Image (tube, rainbow, N blue to C red; front, side, top):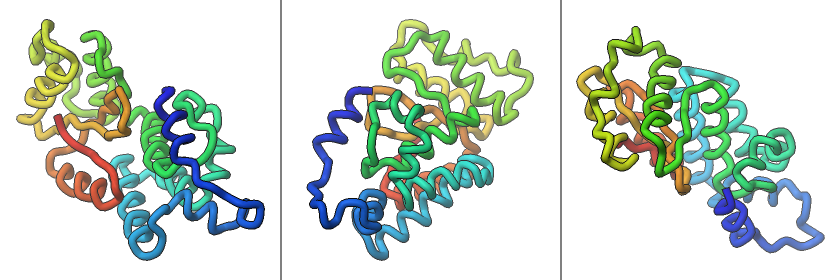
Length: 207
């Protein structure tokens, strides 16, 4: 997405030859606040990563790498980041790492802000299938939940309302883009996850 490339260049810090390549520079890119505040945010984000992924150490490990060694992360996952227009570390790299790691496991699904209804339904069905919730899929009747003449945001709200009686929240991880990163979580877990996202400096919200 071109927005990431523009934002990255506009926020690129000034460096000198004396400090280029130092550990301090790499740490500041990952944790721009520094100190205890950054440590608390790091802990919250790693806790959220494990909860959203069902305890996956692979997901948590990728997020930790983006936090602690952003240059190495970009080097390892450059092909994946290229699709987002990210070519070097950015302050929100760890949040993007979480989204991409969850996506690799099929635990999030990213759709455009203006999406065909068939794609939206496929995304939500896929997320429920991946979690093993509300099976068999034919009994979900998601198609009955939405109005075909509504826009994507309205349809996502309607799907969320349809799932709530089953104890399921349809939410999104906000990446400040023109897309929705969809995720389904248990309603009993949602408040804690939402608070962890806020404590880490990011937004997980329901529709």
